[in-house]
Image (cartoon, rainbow, N blue to C red; front, side, top):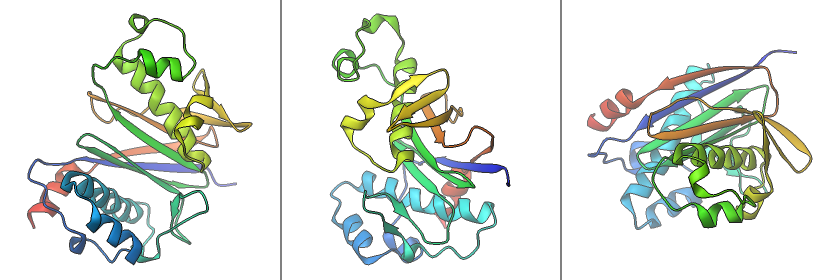
Length: 217
């Protein structure tokens, strides 16, 4: 069996980002309508950058001529493109990341590290320890691990995040075990990739400069 491979491509969005739906290859009509209906230009830009990263990443792993217009969602709302390796997109703040994998399933999550009162969130997760027992970076790394696991499982939902059990680089939900990888994408962000196999050749590529050039073109 071929060894599993995963590529994470990511970019930090420049302040002057002015992408439009027309700047990307054709998107499915329902998705295009949803993007155009977004009131927040920043949210629209994050979504468009995610699809741009998907197009760039698939080229980097030698999947040519990816047709974004073929993008559909499964019964649980998880997007996929028939014939294209498993992928997952995440964004937080000004950072957007896309994981693309061969021979494994993936879930990706990024979280901007910030000072927030996590007491209620920890209570929601079933954690009783005081907030002072962990740093914001620890909390958001845990949260990213939980969300990446839920996304990899294909069944998203806030309640499912609380059901994820974390232990020693592994996560478990729905009687499935996932391997957790914690790439360092940026010093002020936590990131986690969940895979359904332990032996994964992981590569990470920063496309921030390419995005800036693309935006200026």
